[in-house]
Image (tube, rainbow over all chains, first blue to last red):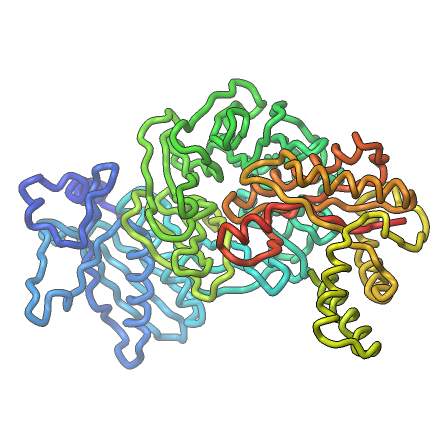
Length: 421
Length: 186
């Protein structure tokens, strides 16, 4: 049972995106103008009604609010946010979130309604049902629906981040939910497992593992937890990147000591060489349409980013600023690439349009910031940073305005954001 | 590192048994480590290396255990060579060390070695892996040009994954930009 009033949705988006300039002076300090020029949508989640004998309505509401906050699209206005002498911000237009929770019959039922304010017109309403045990999944689904209805972006509430975690002498893969919760270790082979990437369906990981003694390309099935070593030569296999159609993995492979970009099918067959330079070529990443690859090459001296067609043709240089640029990841939205640039203290995260314009630096911290990868909706980047003195996983919004730390225990690097799961 | 610790422990134990004073133990250790002189390399041969370097690498674990058992009789010191930042070119010092190593390999024709390329933390993980491989290969090529049979030389890169010094100073970085050697077969 779902009703959507398209005009209302459109109006809500318009209202949020095109707030008149005269209102700028009244902005909440938390509201930041985003690089693309649109503003966050104001959301007013009301206390959920319904079964008040348990804490379920409030727990569910808090989970949904947390997801909505982490989506990066909204400024959340809570009813009590203006209390204790602070003035309360009342936006000229916003979207109300209402929920009614019913626990009759042992199941959790939520009826969620979005309304446009101040008019009060209902934008959509939708029913959700699950077992109480799966309350978190229900919250994620509801939050992602709200994101999709109001912005057109797929939500990230069900996404995960895989990363490399130091375990004494070895490095193993672990995975967390997008908000840092629900951590579990994936590999236990007491070797070096590094540079993980996801298959586009989210069912498998490709990474470099030394467990056979050589840096090989390994496929890990998340359901069966089985490894398949698809390497056929005793060479360095590094920096894998799965193509968007799932049919190929681009990687850096050495021959006579020199790394070039190759592609290989996920079963290890069909090895194809794409670059033929005497310099180091590494860290390939696919464009979302699979037609192009961005990669790092040392052919001009230090490492710089280059673009090429997926067959290796039409190579052109992308970055000119800085002497060490690497670790590119192509935005799923297509137009830009995230990468790292070296400065005195380490690396900083940058983005640049694929046209070579609009270079933006997203981090400016002590320590180093490395291996950025995009969230599947292109709103966030995850990366590893040593800013606290230890290496941990962080996320930052694509314009650098919102930074969150996902791990706290140190020794965590090389995060890779899953596709929408 | 582990090898060296075991070596020193054994050396210490030998000194205690022999009733040496502490200061003498130190001077003995200095002599022994300083004597990177390759012609002192003596290793008991035990079969040819397999053609597959991965097979060889699997055997490394066995050999390491064996090596620990035989550490008492082992006199070999394989000295690392060091590199400049972002470079895989060999320094004059590295060439001199490798010349000694090549001579040692010439008088120990049964030995094969694994050349491990390493980097400091200032590069990215992935570029460093490629750079480490280049460093190991530069060492291999130098040894081959010096007359060592390429079939006796294997390379592997660990990038910045296995620093010799976990510090974050210039001194630590200088120690981490290196190629190390392991005996993998005889």
